[in-house]
Image 1 (cartoon, rainbow, N blue to C red):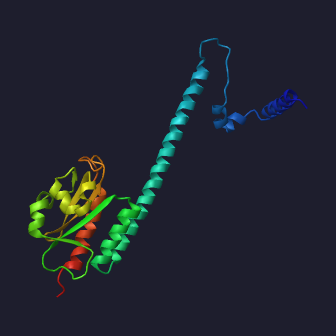
Image 2 (cartoon, rainbow, N blue to C red):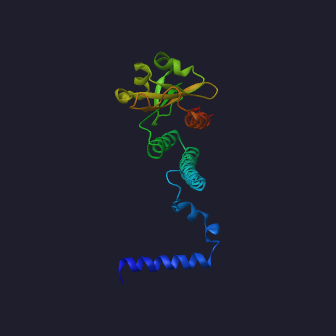
Image 3 (tube, one colour):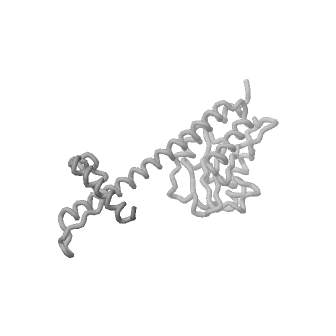
Length: 229
């Protein structure tokens, strides 16, 4: 059987099927919108062609929007799972060292944070063994005083002395910072995230995530550092 004869046979089958099922395109509008139908109108575009063209454009736009919505929903689900895992690990931590370890692992692994810092102010109740980075109140006030008195997270390129105190020997690699003062009855520390890109933590970046984590730490950390009575 030649290719031409085979195509003719296939076309005849399609013709026969459509003849026997005249409502096929009504029941399958997606097929109708996908096919090309030419009209003998010369260079002019018929109204039907224009309508079909618009329908196809709208369908493409809707398909793109649906794909974006699906992608956003997937991202939000993953973010919720990671956040819930972090919260559970922080709440279940039995001491400050384990809490800091859980926070560090989550920020590094789940949230791909380049640099992380948790500074706690030494008020005389520091545990003997801990992974916390303790600094004296006077040193903190001298170097990160502007952050300590801030009522919200501060973002952007920070002063050299601030970055040095927050990130220690990693300071030279830090381009931008988002830092949040931690407080219960009073200031007891600073949570800071750093990035090598000076534009990454810009002044207009959202702070919902670090604010949420900060609220948790404001409740949990004092329980581990307050003197036992």
